[in-house]
Image (cartoon, rainbow, N blue to C red):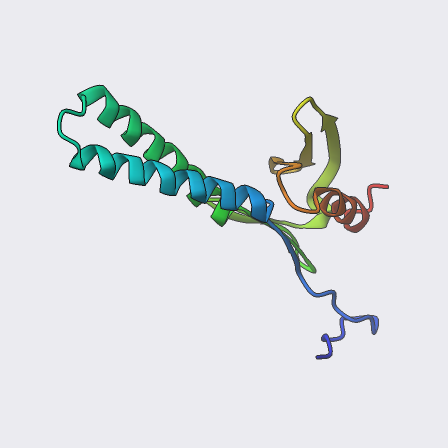
Length: 144
């Protein structure tokens, strides 16, 4: 498959999407499934306490929300810019609007703050190939 030509004769670059590590999404889904099973086991049990039901319901809600968040989260690099998709929004920022990228190493992993004219976008080492994503943003925004 040939990519379309842009002005100046260069070929367009295929969009590249970065998502949370597959292992992370799998573990979160497994935890969600486990807590759903615990909740239904409590329903079937005689004499389960109210606090046991509430605890199981809390973990079902927690892991279901995490699973939904991680399955929706995506950062896509394309010719039009950086597109960020979360549960609540989808926004594309042109590379010309990216001012800088701050890399913040931490105990649990690396965080990246993408400073734009429209505010900040953040991602972390929970994304697969996060270093490549950072490099692409820096290169396409001509920051380094």
